[in-house]
Image (tube, rainbow, N blue to C red; front, top):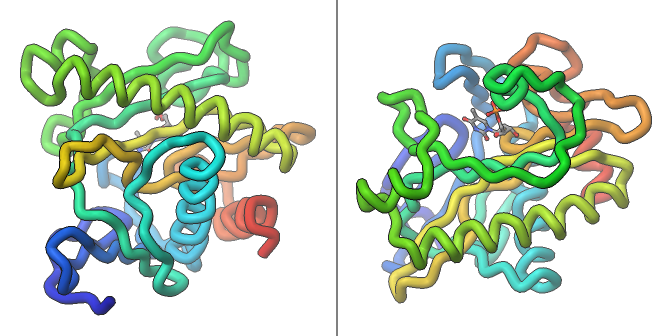
Length: 237
Ligand code: TMP
């Protein structure tokens, strides 16, 4: 399957049409941004890590946790064939340990284990700075239906249950992560976008070293090394 015209360019990926109206090709870039695009940089090899890690985890989530995804076939190191979906305009964030904006907003020290996993939604809208939004606000604005939100939240917690165990097996605490969901042509809600060090916080269980995009966001150095280390732990490569 070959790339046809470019449909969309995001901050970290490009999306191309294919000869099939139901399929797209996602192409992962090395470009990195933070703080709603205010900070720019390049993380060499990031596109390859994020592509391969996402595909590996989506295959496992589908086969072992019954989570439907947009994944179809990995075409190359950076390119993947996916189902064409309409992205539900929500960032779905699950947290197991306090960090980042949660710690700032609620004054809970980074690293505090949460008594239960939390879920929050942000509206995917760069111009508005991806504001937090609650269930009723989502329904009131028509960004998703009640049925769609029920499906999305239960799938997000299922993903968390599976991934927490998976990452524990490679000595990683899954601190928090962001998911996006899409609606396929036949109306099915599927997991879309990516699951990678760009979209998850990964801390080494023993040393608590950060092995994710916070190294770029917070200028901690060793950014490429962290992505490579996560690739090694997840894929053995
Ligand atoms: P936060 O603590 O900054 O709200 O981030 C929570 C999680 O969501 C963290 O794992 C990083 C991820 N994330 C994204 O994938 N994209 C974003 O634009 C932001 C702000 C966070």
